[in-house]
Amino acid sequence: ELVQAIVEENGKTIADAKGDVFRGLEVVEQCCALGNHMMGETLANAAIGIDTYSYKEPLGICAGIAPFNFPAMIPLWMFPVGITCGNTYILKPSEKVPSATMILAEMALQAGLPPGVLNVVHGTKPVVDFLCRAPEIKAISFVG
Image 1 (cartoon, rainbow, N blue to C red):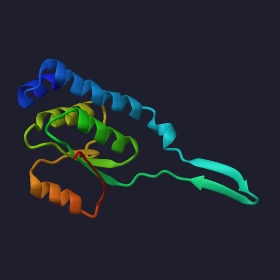
Image 2: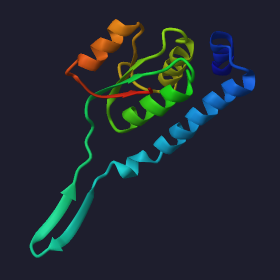
Image 3: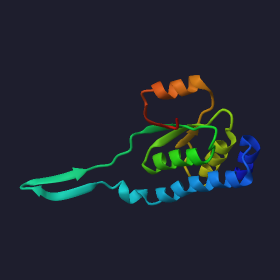
Image 4: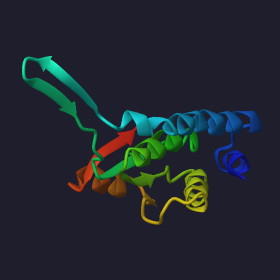
């Protein structure tokens, strides 16, 4: 379904559309191991009487602005990482090819992602401007 949507909407060949999806899924696989990396670190006795600690904490709300040319791969490089790190995510697909993002969002819900963790917004420059200026959004990922 995802590959077919990319073929129909973006005009890619089936092989290119499959590559778009599979390259994105490689990042999703890596996200499965991120839990261990998010635990932080400690170093006892860095110096006499000095211990060091690092904490890795979620930022809160993150956003991604996806391009038209890789409608599945780039979103899959964005939201799985942000969500795995404990953030909520706002994803804005290209207005030219939004179907792949909508399918991915639906798949995430079907896989058990709670509603409201991944949010999709549609639009053009005004929406992008809003995302870039909103003080509640602590990190933005984009290509270009």
